[in-house]
Image 1 (cartoon, rainbow, N blue to C red):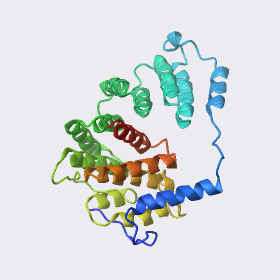
Image 2: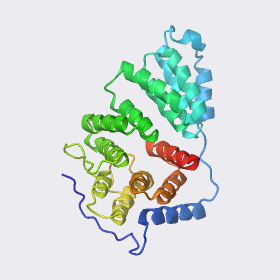
Image 3: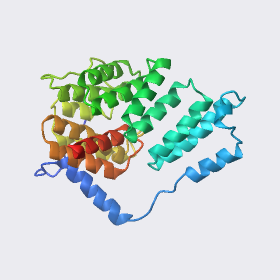
Image 4: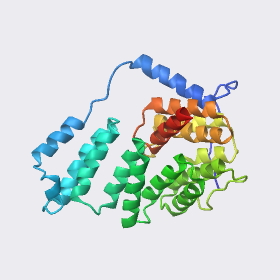
Length: 297
């Protein structure tokens, strides 16, 4: 069912024990040498300026206003800007303001859950996830957030159930691959001797190489070719640049290493992932959560 044409290991040093980690560190060193101090411009000021111009009502008056839906969007735009700056607590505040305008908006509640997760407020995440699922219990995205929460808190039976649903229910076959990966890893971390994927037709392209890696169908070094292909002109998949693919690969391979008991190696993979700064990916927040957990131990 799973196949990836044209795999080769041309980019992997044959003697590299940790080819992905070596590649990530080399790439980071080149990035720092080429662009050592340029900071990305923040969009917070512009988003807040647009809000000021929109004359948004007070929070307690917003839900009953004629423009409640639009005002919720305006608050959410400020939240997104703060989230992109890594200000997860500030983003949570803005999403709560958006929710005062649209209290029954499952997507806003899920967005709040996501930034609370990244801020490692797991109690708040659980409350927001439950509120979102009470409105839309079949949401694949919110069920995946719920699965992530159960995963980092090591509630393996609950995580397995959530990711089984995500892997089976996501209508996008390519996106379902990420549910498959977490479903497999939750089983691995739970000690299941023979993990399995949900039986369904796989998507095309990325992240299928990661599923092949999990099944032991080729080694870690063979991930480097499809990762590098992320920046090729022929890549038409959205959100799958080389850095984005590398971010994901470091997380899932790091989790597999943890399942094998190679804890120090897993920590190194998560740290390399965080250095890429793809903070808008779920894997970034998951890696930070795992690093914090390992540090506490």
